[in-house]
Image (cartoon, rainbow over all chains, first blue to last red; front, top):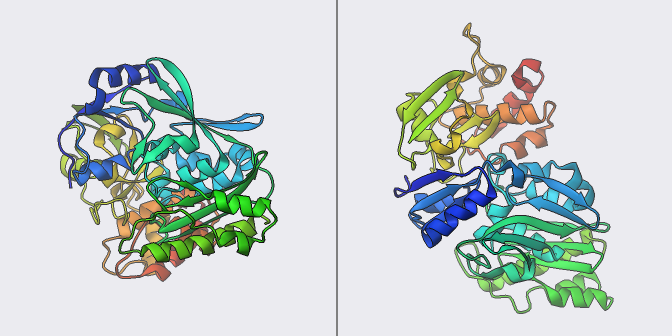
Length: 273
Length: 157
């Protein structure tokens, strides 16, 4: 399978990438690691006229300790997040989950910014960043702006990025104490049929769900129940409340909601609830 | 567009369409057909090569993205005197292949794994090979070969 023809431009800076986006608008797509975009292009589900290759912008590849937060450059590869001592010390759940994405080959290419900007609700990282209450830094012709992770995902494969903007940084608060992450897959490398993460920050417990609707879900009912003193098992009973997962050959809506309750209970138990 | 890629130590330079995938570049422009196309969907790992010393699935990398990079394929592992690379030798000794289709990708994935983790446990090897599928289901001997190769310090080179 070969993508439809396109023009390829490799840029040397974020500013140059923005200039190219301004020039080509909707006809262009940014290419980071390409591990979400290229498969779609091979299936002809995406047919951009221009690919702007930002994959070598080392200025956007870093994991930095910034006190209360850890800042991750958008072009940091999953492998580099997974093996980052800064991530392991400050936000161990993020390092762990980055090391669970796809397989080693995928993690050598895929990036955190690419995963978030792609907007696939079955991806692992968006739900983690949502559960953490993270912040996404977006750069465009009008400068930089910050978007709360909970506001970033707008719909199925739809995120709060204008055609002339790019995601440049992901900021997440340091975590406190134990955390839990579980996903159900048929093969190790597959997307999660359902996944759940539970993590504590200075703002309290955050519970995130993977693949339980068109966007990553924050399981607020579970968080409220735990805050009110519920056990992990009792709190997890409300894990599927308000969720709208899709049904496919991996499972019905009812099955996914059941799995969500099971995985949230396990994640809560791991997180010390 | 012109891409220049060092493949197994030899500088290769070719005109390609931007949409050319690295695996097709290696097989058709360079003429190295040891790297197989299996699933063509980033799942099976048959097309695994080393790029900058790390395993990648060459069906999901554009040749343009590899412009300027060092790429190693299965043909580039054996020593100049013809001696097999320790991972290849271990596959031979431990019967690490049946039909052989997944083998080039398995060998490259294990070579990358051993560079990152020179002393893997059996579990590390199994997790490290989660991106490579063997339809003969010959995993047991593949894992045995990887563990045997890890005992040889030369397996990291």
